[in-house]
Amino acid sequence: HDVLAWARIPSQPPSNEPTLTDWWQRTKGQTPHALRKGLQSIAMLVPWMIWKQRNECVFENARPSVTTLVDRIKAEAKCWAQAGSLGLRVVLPTNWDVH
View (cartoon, one colour):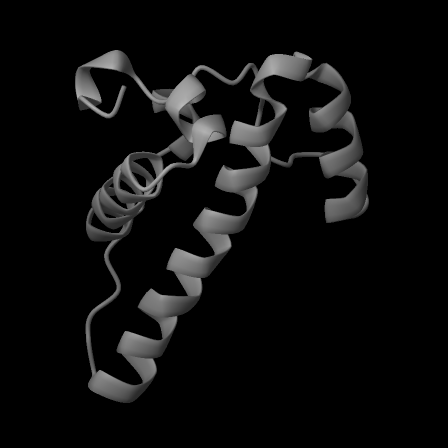
């Protein structure tokens, strides 16, 4: 599941970059200025949600699930957008009803 696939950000996940910082610099440079706040929000949201799922697995014996993780990321992104994250409002699909 490519989380950025549902967003309108023209970006690819990290692949051959030596560091995450190299990927970030490349991606930020390739992203139109109007979409950068959305990219920054997603770049914070995704690791946060991965961390939360990891904690559920470690401390609550939950089973890891990519499908559940992606669904939670989408739900949280929608909440952030509704709470006022203008950058996410720009990049999220219009059918999410956050606009």
